[in-house]
Amino acid sequence: MTAPALVLAPGMLCDANLWDDLRGSLDSRMVDVELTASSIGGMARQILAATTEPFVLAGLSLGAIVGFEVLRLAPERVLGFCAMSTNAGAPRAQQLDQWTALDRQVAEGGFADAIESILPTMYAVPEPSAGHADRFRAMARRVGPDVFRAQLAAQATRDDALPSLRSVRAPTLVLSGGADVLCPKDFHTAIASAIPGAELRTLPGAGHLLPIERPAEVAALLGDWLHRHVRSL
Image (cartoon, rainbow, N blue to C red; front, side, top):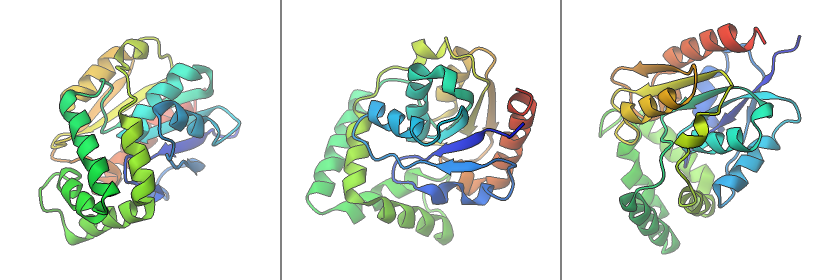
């Protein structure tokens, strides 16, 4: 039996490079998705259009938020789900204000400054290594200001996904970074508690961009989970 595709949904201001350090470590055909629509529903349809067959979905941050909607819209398509560094709750008022301010800043030509303001929240330390910082900047520049503004608009269309997660039956792995300032462990505990049978793993001292900061550990956890829960389907 041919293994199902592993569809990869990146976070906001990230592209396929987010997953590059995992590609040689997982025995899966990887399908990258760009999230460019201006609503969570539109992004979910982009994921569903990535392959015609049932698939395993791994998403980080915004990618996992869209994954919650994919599970709601087409649960029969998803053979397994990995949610990393994310939040299933509805946007908070402070977040909506921040996204509005970022959108205004980018519209007025401040895209580069917006990237720099976001960068310290991506890793476990406020001043990440030059390599990690430059990697995020490069991804963000490739995503570009127009798609970033669409992603900000999409974030504002989020609903509280936790109630619908109780009906998820796909095997689920939830990964969090112990030092993630954007999406702390309790966000992931709530997700894992809502999904029947979900496994929760936390990487101590890790920040938001787990596949970049801790690729070997992510690959090991994801690979083990795939073999235990998805290969046997």
